Length: 423
Image (cartoon, rainbow, N blue to C red):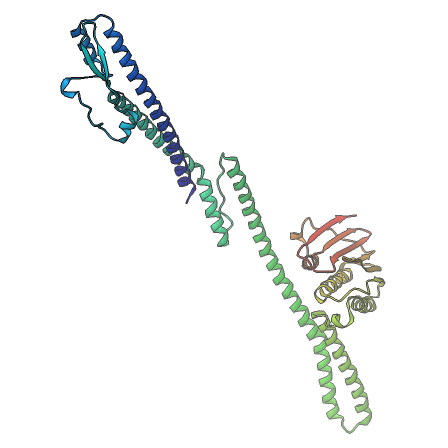
């Protein structure tokens, strides 16, 4: 049942209840008035009889009074009461009273309650008509007002239906009802926020697609430039072995070269596998895995790294450890590509609730983006991984270097927070 119908039923109930109470009060008052009018008419007749009026005049006065009935000889016997139950209750038949004139003639009279009942019935009918008219006017006015004021709610419902279909463009009109106005403001803010989020999601999808394509290019380049060249070299060496099969010295030298190239292929496949997925995390643990990665990175880039682990006793959580490892890996990739640093300090600590990773370099720093939407792919990747951890990622940078701090719960939670600040 809609609001308009509920208001209509409520108003009808109120009017009916008020009219019923008023009618009962009026009928009780009417019964009292009928009794009082009858007694007053009888007293008036008795007073007139004692005023030495002649018989003819007294009889005319009594007969012309609408509050009295003169009983003739033919009506001397009692008659059955007439009228319905309501009339009998309001105007019961009064007893016969004998009035004696100054000449000694007697008149039998009775209070005429039926006349008063007719007046009361007419009054109640007029009141009922006024109530019905007022009810109709009230219902019409309220229904018009309610339907007009609730029109923004109908627009709001259509807007909510449009949200289910993925459309975030239908806004609701304002209204002068404070509660509905507040609701519409929240709805319009929701629409704006959802539209903004949809734009962000589309942008993130594009960036993710670009990131995937970039990873594919790097993988293809690694396979072609490194592993492909090594396999080509092995192929050439085996061909030369066949051509120089009668030259023992060449065979020994070629076998050694092939062995070296096979080792290089094996190491390349291992490095490539580790880049795709750090399978050793489950066996070595987070602390040892980061230590090995730092050692390899230090050997390649010839940059001094101070490794300060203090979290060797944490329990292994593969999902958490993978994200932390990838964030660390991305930080070192950024340092190698952009920082031009000569020293890097890494610390990994843990307490009862949180795991903290901090990486500081003495490089040239960079300009922080105004918000996450304009962040680069590397920084955005770290942000998303911190989000998956339910952690807090803080990046501080200036011309003297950059510090990246990740604080993540030891147990994964459904919350995230990013923060940027300039030192």
